[in-house]
Image (cartoon, rainbow, N blue to C red; front, top):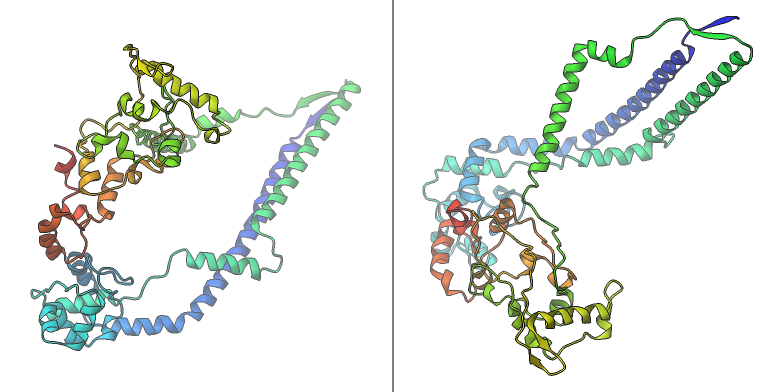
Length: 456
């Protein structure tokens, strides 16, 4: 019997194919990078003159921007932004609108300038609804120069602007118009096709050798991949570090979701459609959850509240039905309500036999977090949808918001306190508005992010 030796030609060809694929991809990426460099250079030349002008303007400014940033954040940021109008005007470009000596006087004592009838001061006072700027007599001219140097810095361009523009120019300026992804996809397809051909050739040769009684032997034995991997300490250490980091990432993500029940939508013993009650019939939320006005909790409505209407409504209108819930389904749920309260619709009387309804709680804050519904609903005048979402559109009630600590704090930082017609806040608003120099106060400025407000 003849013996033939296989010299690992298949593995060599595969190795050659991989090298070829990498070389093509490297060339394609290099071409793409060179085009991106050309685009960035062109953009740099186009923006060279404005940058020079901005640099000259910045260099002409007096003061230290770093020190000015600290002063701005501590004294000015509550009312002003550099590039956007806020409670007061945007400060970028203010040195071009007013003389520096005028700015010194205005910042140190603006009410005095308004009372003196300064035209510029009065114009600003009238433009911003007669909201007086807080005077800062403690600031020296050097401090004001530092602030002005900071606010007059040119607005930074968005970091993704160059990337977006470069991508557009690459697509339009390349000669072939073929992206790197398409080239790599074609090369990968060719590689897979070559592998398939080699596998078929190998099988054909093996069948040919078997048919001719030719013994196929391997010329040498290779070490198993797993054994070679274990013996390579560098690869083992790198793999272990990668696995540990990946595991820590997923474990952290999982632990951060513990106790967060956003989207929780349990099935209740009696189906209650908020879509029908709060949406179609426009029933006020606080009609059923009446304790939300005066109590810490909103409360679960008692069944006698339901019976205020359903003593007369024993079935729903046909147009109320949907594809998922038929009229018969809704009528059956009303029958469950009657069974629970012991109501006989035929005799229009109570039997006296009642059954408890085991409602499933949806929103549940931890015991160490204090939340008062009346403070938010009655005092602050916040709508229920702010926290509970569009309940008037929900067929089945679910937890809309995450109800996490960060979510509550962000709301306190962003929500202005309702002052109109609210005597509770009149005195404190007058004092704090002078302190912060704002027209409207947020809950955070009134102490809404202090630890003791929710944890005590």
